[in-house]
Length: 99
Image 1 (cartoon, rainbow, N blue to C red):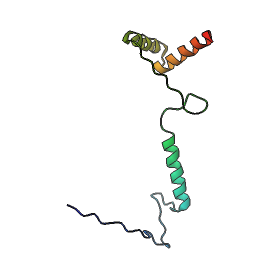
Image 2 (image 1 turned 90 degrees about the vertical axis):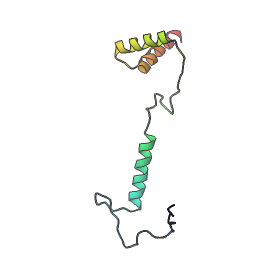
Image 3 (image 1 turned 120 degrees about the vertical axis):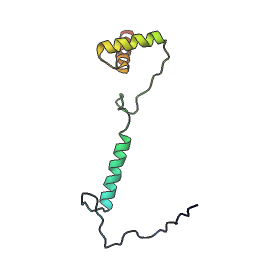
Image 4 (image 1 turned 90 degrees about the horizontal axis):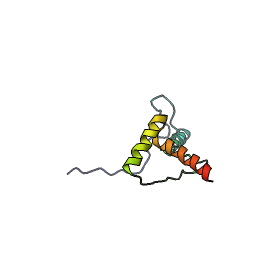
């Protein structure tokens, strides 16, 4: 069994020592804050973009028959759209007619 050495809190880098990244940029507090902000932007930017003007897009889940699913896929393929895009358009048109 390997024993792990315990880390002791203390200065890793002497105050007079200057650290640089691979590109030669000085690593200081501003550099670290910018790196954190950049990482947070990337993490928060993951996933699909919202279809709503504000906030998260609602998700509508419906169960349909296999035959209807095949018909929807074929219709979407004929228009060159994804199944989701096609369904959104059809629902929007139908809601305008009824509403």
